[in-house]
Structures are given as C-alpha cells and as structure tokens.
Image (cartoon, rainbow, N blue to C red; front, side, top):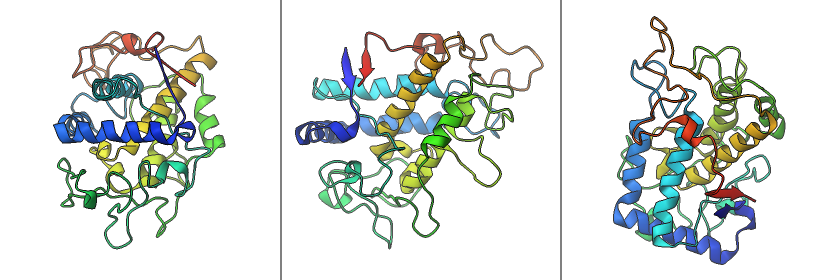
Length: 287
C-alpha cells in the first residue's frame, strides 16, 4: 500500500524521482504506447461505437485502471514513485508549484505554444511528441488561455458535482440533461453560458496537447486524473447508498445498448469490469 500525495507537498527529491521515471518510460517507448491507448478509447457521443473512456458512466473506473497501469510502469523504474495529484481548486495559477522548472515546466511561448522550461521541454531532447494529430513534435501548453481567458474550476463548481447523489443518468452520455455526478464532474453538464465544467475545464485551461484524445502527451494529465480519481473516492464516501449506474446491461431497443458499459460488463482493453474498479483499498490511498 502506498500513498498518493498532493503535488504541493512533494520534496524536490520526490519531484526529481517522478520526472526521471516518466522520462525513462518515454525513452523506452512505454509512455507513447499509453498515449495511444487513451487516444483509441477517446470515443465521442456522435460515434456509434462503444464509449468506455469518456462521455459515459465508465469514465471513472476506466481512468482508475489506466492510471494504475501508468503507475505500475513507473514503479518498475523506481519502486518509490507514485502518481501525485493536483488539486486545481487551490493550486489554480500558472505560477503554482506544479508548473515550476523543477517539476512539469511552465506554459508555452506565445508564438507556437511550445513548452520551453522543465524536464519535458523539447529542446532538452528527451520529450518528442510522436502520437497525435498536430504537426508539432514539441509539447504545447497555453495555461489560462490568455487570449480568451478561462479560470480553473472553483470549489463551488466542484461542490455542484459532488452534491449530486445520482451516479449517472440516461442517456449515459455528454447530454444527460439531469446531470448526474459523472457528467457534472467530467464536465459536459455545463450551463449554456459555459462550455465546460470541472474535469473538462482543466483540460481546456492547460490547452495545447491536453485538449484532445492524445492529452497524456502532457504529463500534467496524470496529476489531473489522480485528483479526479480522489474526487470519485470522496463522492462514494459522501453518498454510500449511491452505486454505479447502469447496474444492468441496457435493454434491447435502447439506443445506447452496446455503447455503454454496465456494472459487470468488461472494459476494454483490460477485460475488467467497473465493479472491480469501485475501490482501491489495499493498493493505494490519498493523503
């Protein structure tokens, strides 16, 4: 059992060990393989295929398993490393410790959004982007989107999601009008004056590579999703009578049948069910 820490509490030695392990996964090709996995299962509503990673109830259990896979690879490099989390409601500035030169590096330069600082700067020679739809081979960010500013989610926006006692609602996608915790935290159930809330808003605030299916090209992805995983944990504790939905496979005739994962159906690519990912006790805990 190990402890995932708030990134703001990491020592300089812990930061160095984490980034060194990430760089080793990149060098070995494991990292880019993980990015391809995320991209493959980034299936939007409008596609008629199975949606397992996003815009569907399995958003949380799928990413929990995905995060664990990354973490296990890190620990093969350095057994003392695990994924820290980033609480974006408190560390909400482009100059927060997360973006320092000794950790993830900062925003991209104005001309082309290229990240120029930190261990993942292209010019250091260790971080070439090979998976994605852009021409750029360098990591890009645009923290806060200065040309059209947005802010990171507030504690109030997060509370709006965490207070919803229903896990998810029909039609189990990004349009679930009644909200549900999953849709509100994933960030599609935004009021008409906004396009995103919570998780999605964080991706947009970082900008660059974080805005598409190949978002894990930016190592900030893992810290963001560790916090999302923590929030699912806290929601479960707050609503102990509220389970994963849909509990049973959708009936014949339902337009979402075959496109949404029920509680005991396997999630590709691992053949694990959401039920098997409902908890993480005995594996890791959050400080």
